Length: 356
Image (cartoon, rainbow, N blue to C red; front, side, top):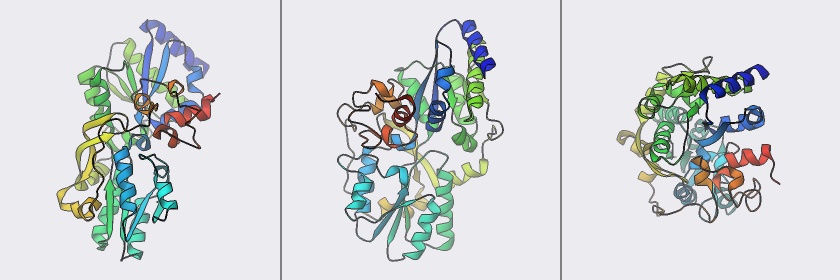
């Protein structure tokens, strides 16, 4: 490990200026904190966390709609557990459940299909959240629903796509990023192709990286080597899992059921073609098509007063720079979504960096 750190020092000297790298994925954020990677880095090399936490970027409007759907008559609303405490305007799904809504926490969308098969008199809705990693399993569940003729299974899709968010960050010019530590799990699905624009359009290097300390340090080393030699390529450190072409079957499954749409990212705003909606021929599986939803688009800031989630997701601030961090906002009483998810920057910072 010390040899790897020494190599980073030498590369930094060769580059001759401070370097800022963004780890896009929330799983990387946690791994970096948990394994003390930041403490190993030489002076002049900094890591900033990006928007790759699906819980954190789910819009207030979508939480409000989810709560409205779950309160409808004859509806069973199903969701991953980490969505239960994501704040809406005044409440969250956990509180709505306590008030009597039939909300069930699941580990997989296929469990929601099982519930639908067992409750033919109910509309069973799965809250389809997450990036390219989770959307194939939702598509596979839709395939099963069609195949088995389970007509009372629906989804509320708020799936997000990672590459358009990175494009939005870079095109804004708000933040200086010298290179990207790319997500390992997302990249197993999409491969390297969707990241090529980062090299071609912005001349920034990126490396798809694993999650062990050695993987992360090697990924950083590969980025510094690119910067030192004035290259901007998409490389794979995580070769034992990720292939250049990704998983074409999973991508084909996503594309069969979903198409890109504009999506609102909490704290960031609307990003063109960064979400997934059901294609027209599967629109009968969209809960919006069978239930009238009253919640309208929420314009303006969607974060509580003083919350810096948006700036943190864009890498403009660190969690301890938020005035609410560790005071009003804690994992036990989260104000912002970045403190709710275990992969959120604020939750990771609170747990691993202290909160005095």
